[in-house]
Picture: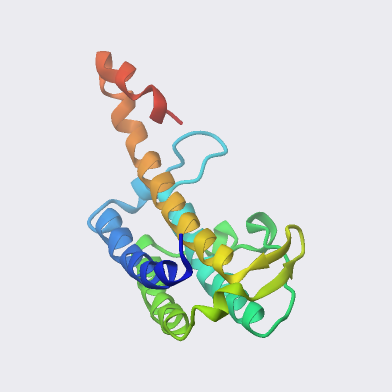
Length: 172
């Protein structure tokens, strides 16, 4: 994807995420949203908390680090993410993401095509560009939305009787 194209598309896609999360979670029972689809799988709330953590501590920080020519560390969600005991409700997480995303979008709208070639060293991955980081941010956001939707599908797949065979690609 061309640099000018990613600068136009990134804010559009990232702006939609809080709206999608709200649509997915509003009016849903909290215990349903907190239920993991299978052992060692993330629930909807787990996915949403992770996206909020990344917005709080990772993506905007990394954009600024690359702009400043500073290297940055890897992020381990298991050891550095919000502990399960401190997790908020889905509604509170969506509200927090919405606030954080507004600030992130302001940061992204300041970027220029020339900025996308800037690089820094990621602790585990080596040299990365700002363009690559933006692609990863969008892919990461979308991946966890799909993961959350897949988690919500599981009880419906299990209850679909003979139609279960049509869902084989989606079983957790």
